[in-house]
Length: 544
Image 1 (cartoon, rainbow, N blue to C red):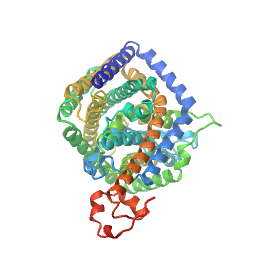
Image 2 (tube, rainbow, N blue to C red):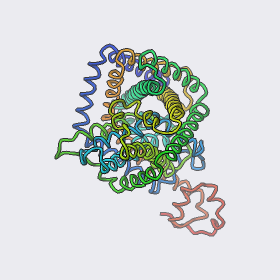
Image 3 (cartoon, one colour):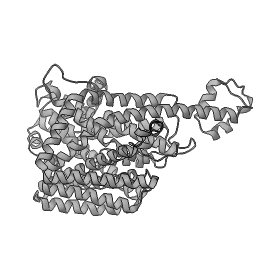
Image 4 (tube, rainbow, N blue to C red):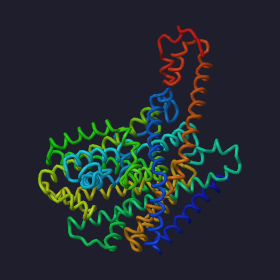
C-alpha cells in the first residue's frame, strides 16, 4: 500500500507539473497575467496574514529554543551532528539563498536607495541610503528563514527522533488518523508540496540562467539569446546530474563548501579594496537599525496611505519563502540530524541571516557609497538592467574582469547546488521520505526540471517564468494553514516525548532517586553523563 502511495504521489505530481508548464508554454502572456493578478489579489487581501504568521514563526522558534524542550536532540538523545558546522552552514546557504543573494546583495539596497520603502524619504539621499540598508537586512534576515526553520525542525524531529518518513502528510497523520475522510487527503498534501517545490525551483533556475546570460553579455559581449540560454542550461544540467549521482555527502557537500569559500573570498576582496571604513560603519549601523526596529518592521502595513511597497517586496518575500518551505525545510531537516533544538534554531535563524547581512552590507554599502561620493551610474544601471548591475560595480574596482569571472562561477555553482539539492528533495518527497531516494527518480526529476526551464525560456522567456513563479507563490496561502497544523502537532508530540523520557528515567533510577529539578535536568542530558555523575548514588528522590 505504501509503495502504491509513493508512486501515486510521484506520477500525479509529475502530471500536474507537466499540465501547468504546457499551459504556461502555449499561453505565456495570458498565463503570466492571470497568475500575476491572482497573486496581487492574494497579497492585497492577505498581506497582513503573512506578516503576522511569519513573525509568529519567529516567536515560536525562539520560545522553543529557550524552553525546557531546547535540549531535545533531532535524533536519539545520545546522537551527534552528522556534518561539521562549516559544512552544515554551507549547505544551508546553498539551499536557502543560492543565487538570489549574489544578485540582490547589491541590487536590492540600490533599489531601495532610489525608491525608499513606503516613500518615507526622498530617493537618492543619505537618509534613503540608511533606510535602504535597514530594510535590505530585514528582508534577508531572520524572518526569511523562519518558515524554512519551522518545516525543517518538525520534519527532522519526526524523521530522526520518531523514525518516521519526513513527509508533510506523516507529520499530520496523528490528526488525520481519527478522521478517515480527511486521512485520504494525505497524498494530496504531498503532491501539493512537490508541485510548489518544482515550480519554484524551475522558476529560480530559469531566471538565474537569464541572469548569467546578462552577466556574460556585460563581461564578454555574449548575446542575450535563447541559444546561449540553452547552452548555459545544458552545461548546468550536466554538472548537477554528475553531482546528483555522487550523493548528498559528496556532491552537494563539496560544492556547498566551495560556494561558501568563494563567497567569503569575494566579499573580503570588495571590503578591503572598496571604501572599507564606510562599509564597516554601514554594517554596524544597519544591524543596529535592524534590531532597534525589528518588531515595527515585522508588522508594518500601510492602511492609511497608498503604498504598494510592502506587497512588492516584504509580503512577496514572505509568501515566496512559505511556498518554498517544503523544499528548503526538508533539505535543512536532512542535514540537521543530531543537533539539539536550541542549536538548530540558533544555527538556522542566526548564522545564515548574519552572513546575508554581511554580504548585503559589503556589496550594497560599497555601491551606495560609490553613488553618494560620486555619480558612479550604479543607480541607473540597477534600474536599466538588474542582471548586469553587479558587474558594472565591478568595473569600478581593481581586477574587474577577474571579479566578474569569479562572480559568474559562483552563481553557476550556486545554481548547480540548488538544482542538485532540489532533485534530491523532490525525489525524497515522491519516495515516501526516503533518506536515499533511487537514482532513477533523481535523474527523472533533474531532467523534468531542466525541461520545464527550457520550455518556458523558449516559449515565453521571462514572462513565462514569472507566470510560473506567481503560480508557485499562490500556494503559500493554503500552506500557511498547514504549517499551523504542523506546529500544533509538534507541540503536542514534544510534551508527550518529554513526559515519556521523565517516566523512563524515573523507572531506571528508582533506587537512586534525585530531586525534582535535577531529575528533569538529567532527563534532557546524555544518559552516559548521568551514569558518570559521581554523587548519583547519594541523592534522594522526590519526583513530581
